[in-house]
Length: 142
Length: 142
DNA sequence: ATCACTGCAAAGTCTTTGCAGTTCC
DNA sequence: GGAACTGCAAAGACTTTGCAGTGAT
Image 1 (cartoon, rainbow over the protein chains, first blue to last red):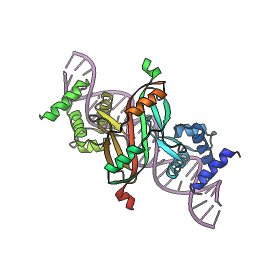
Image 2 (cartoon, rainbow over the protein chains, first blue to last red):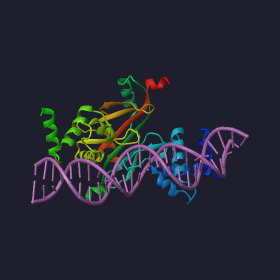
Image 3 (cartoon, rainbow over the protein chains, first blue to last red):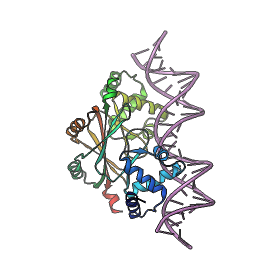
Image 4 (tube, helix red, strand yellow):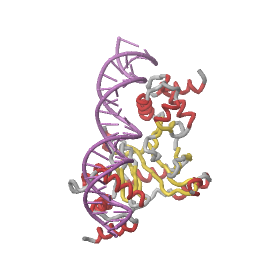
């Protein structure tokens, strides 16, 4: 068992979740990919037969609840998941071919403070979703 | 026929879509509400039996394609739609009770220019989705 | 007259639920 | 041992598709 895997174990256990082979493999996928991935793709990426699709759904739900993963909506008709280890992480999506690139640092903190000030009915903002939808150069040529 | 409805007719016709009672009613709902609404809710808001759910799905697709409406994802498990007449329009969502408030002016233009500069594979950004997820005061107390 | 829009039924996709058996701590 | 996790089957929710009939321009 290598270093990386031991760290994943620690992460999972720290959230009071049980460490199982499936969860370790899933979290490892998310960490290594560092980009959003669907449930289907996760199932296919794992060794054949290791995990049922339903189990992956449930694992992702508990990861999201525990703050280990994030849901991302890229308008692909399903929810994608990504590791929550890097924060302030956003996406640039080509609406024609679906291609995704990442960017960091959206400088949103000031805006959030401002919005909270103007909306006294809200106490706090834990998360923000920011995605840019456009056209990539190769689709532009078509 | 009042002024507002005539303007809606003009908007629809300008996009080379046919003006029908259902589309007029739908666009009027979106304009008056000025907040995101689901397909289900739209069907219920219309006079009973006026439009089939499938027709509303198709009408919204053509509105989005024509730039009359926008899709919004508030993590409610379905897509919401809102009028596209106000631009730079965003949402503050309570992850506990689902309550939604709006805010304008996210000041994203500079960020978008910046991101495009750093991602030469992308030509342009037509749209951006920005939603803040947090907790409202009444859910905070629980 | 033509092409777009509509309703109804059916199918498709993504996601959740129930329950019995298994695994982790 | 007990609570949490898993697989399989089934159901549920949201959305799309096909086709025949209607309506807008």
